[in-house]
Each structure stands twice: as C-alpha cells, then as structure tokens.
Length: 215
Image (cartoon, rainbow, N blue to C red; front, side, top):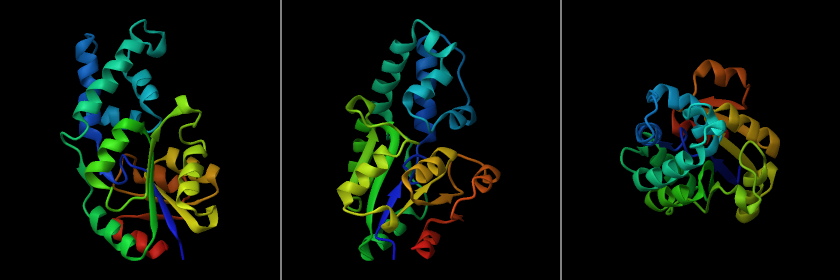
C-alpha cells in the first residue's frame, strides 16, 4: 500500500494556464513585445519561472530588460494567480478519498514558492501535509532534480518505496526517475497524450479517481 503521494501542481491538481498566460502577456505588453498565445505558453511552462520568461522574452537572458521582465512577472502573477485558476474536475474528490485512506500528500512545484503557498492556502491546506515551490536561492534545486521530492518525503516521514509521484509532463517523469519513485501521469494536463505515452510511466490516468487503483 502506497503511504504517500507527491503531486505536481500546474496541469495536475490545478488548471493554472490562463493566469500564467495572462501574466506572460502582461509582461510582453508592458515592454512592447509580441504577445504569446495561451497554447504557446502552455508549451513553455514546467521548468520554472525563469525558464518560462526566457522563452517569453525576445533573446531570452541576453535581453537587457530580462531581469526587469522576470521581476514584473513574479509580482503580477503573485497578485493574479487565483483570477482564473481552479481545481481540475475530480481532484477534490480524490484528495478527500486519499485523506480518508490516511495517505500522506505533498505538492512539489517549479512555481515560485510564495505563489505555491498562496494556492495551497486556498485549495489544499485541509488535505496536504507539505507544499514546496521553487526555492533555488536556498540551495534546493528545482525539478527534475530530486531535491524537492526528497525534502517532501523527509517531511512526510516516508521512503521512496512508500511513495508515488503524480504529474503531467516530461519534467515530472524525469523528476520521478531521479527520485526513485514510480510515476503516474495524468492526461488532463498541459502535455499531449502521445508525449506522455512515449515516457513510459508506471500508469496513465484519464480521471483523478483512477489514481486510487495505483495505490
């Protein structure tokens, strides 16, 4: 019996893409750059905010306005990360079922830690034991490095053999592999089914409650 589930956040528990895309476009409008479509932003997320802005700014980090653009994004998104974001259908029922089974849960996200905590307070504090966002300034490498998952398992008091990882992307599969965890990928997130299949996870699920079958 699995004792702990480590969840990705964006594209797994929460549909955050509209707020992320709106925040990217706010930065692009502010600096007079061409605005990206929501579909393009969807392909750019998953590797942390810095990489998202590298992909959203002309010439990336070589742009002299890059750091200002990154700061602008962080400030705007922190203020607007709940405008259009919501739980995916079936997630609340899944969290309730896991809690009833006394399965420990954690969030591990490449989203900025303050935004993760804000969303955690709104949606997950009744169910989750741990919530971690990107915090490389503290020496904790972001996904797909295993650091954040290892820290979550330490705080939950579980081992790799007692845990599974649930996400929606290639970054999540690599994170699970690097952490020594079986990986379950959800089909409702930000990546196409064909890509998910090519990653050969332990399982793929179409609905949140299907996760219970993997425990």
